[in-house]
Image 1 (tube, rainbow, N blue to C red):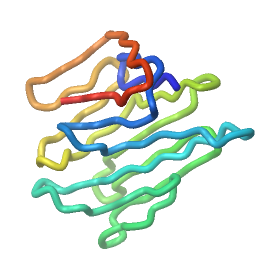
Image 2 (image 1 turned 135 degrees about the horizontal axis):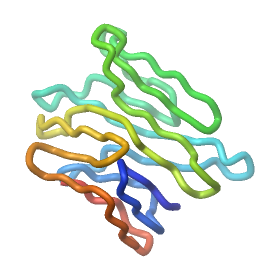
Image 3 (image 1 turned 45 degrees about the vertical axis):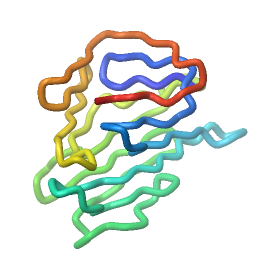
Image 4 (image 1 turned 60 degrees about the vertical axis):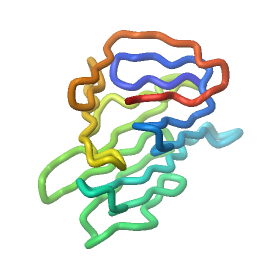
Length: 141
C-alpha cells in the first residue's frame, strides 16, 4: 500500500506509521470492499493514552472528548470543543491512502502537525519527498 502524509509519498508500505519510534497509526484496506480501516493511539502532552481507534471505531474516548465521522473511504477524527482536526484520512486511489490533515501528540508529548504541504514535529519537517519502503513501516521523527 502507498501512503501519503502531507505531500510526502511513501510507496510499498506495510500500512504502519511509526512516530518518534512508536507505532501510532496502522492503516489497512478491507479485502474485497477496499474500505478504510484505521487503528490509532491518541496521547496527551504527558504521553497518556486519551483515545484509541480500532478498525476506525472509537474504543477509548476519555471524557467523550472526540468524535469520529467515517465512510467506507474516509475517516475524520475531531476534538469538537477546540475545533481541532486530530486525524483526517481517505482512500485516494486503489491501494493509496492519504493523510492530509491532522494535529496530535506523539507518545513523547511533542505535537505533530500534518497539512496538505508537509508534516512537522518541532523543527523536523518533510515536504514533497517520495520513498520506496519495500514493505516496511513509515518512520516519522
